[in-house]
Amino acid sequence: FNVPYEFNESDFSICHDLVIVFLDEYPDRTPFEAMRYLIAEANYGGRVTDALDRRLVNVYIAQFFCDDAVDPAQNHFNLAPQLADSPYLVPNDADLEAAKEAARAFPQADNAAAFGQHANADISSAIEDSNSLLATIVSLQPKVVVVEG
Image (cartoon, rainbow, N blue to C red; front, side):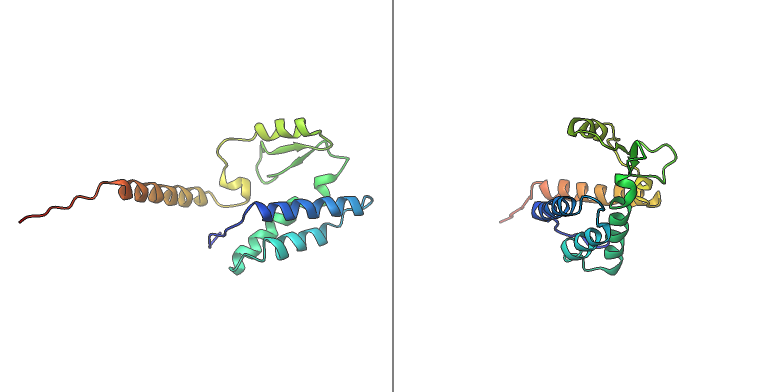
């Protein structure tokens, strides 16, 4: 994101409840367009102020809230199809334990390409993390005051 946003647990909870309601109310055909709009534009999008960030939220939502995610003809849903050997596979029709096991198999460090971003995003992130770490270390240094008198 271009701007840091304060997303919180209540944002997730509202979206979770919204998905449950839509899946319960429309068992024959999932209304992905309505779900994408309410989640990307109304709930999370209501906090997003930058136009490019709003666009990014919509791209991510469109990638995950789609017919392929619930297609019974597929044996898994690829969360990062742009990667040649994507490790981000979630089994379709899995029980909770199988879904958790699939999530545990994900890499510990995510590649920027997994999110459709250029490899330079990893470099920018590492630089920002390093600057934050160094700023924290410097702030913890004892302040020395010399009084001559």
